[in-house]
Length: 141
Image (cartoon, rainbow, N blue to C red; front, side, top):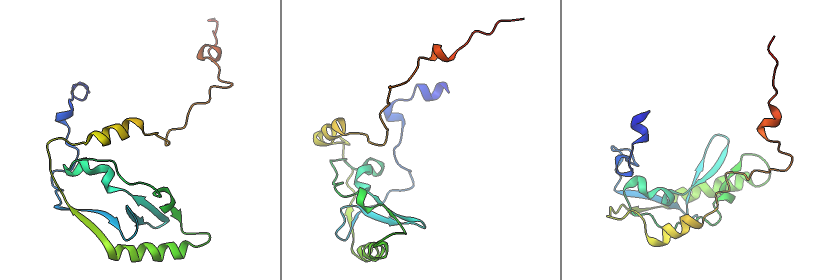
């Protein structure tokens, strides 16, 4: 445990050393990301968000509409969406990986500092009691 507490940023490698692709898949068809079809539904994946894993410079990605790519195989129009995604994979776009000194652009750093993490819900403190209110003294016999 002590070894993990003393880690510095330069001690961590952000990608698998055996995975050094020369061309990164970054979009399919008209999607600005890579739609992935699974056994239960589809999800959008934005490889440009994780360029650091490839040793490339990170920049502000296009994610507009990414959430709309996620759906399950039920309801209206899911077959149409599956067909659209399947056809998009015939137009996969790749870019050459570029290794540079600085891993981020100033624009990316600014975007990251302002972004909202909507995966973590805010705590509603209404009706919350202090921990001491839950604790009771039990007399010893």
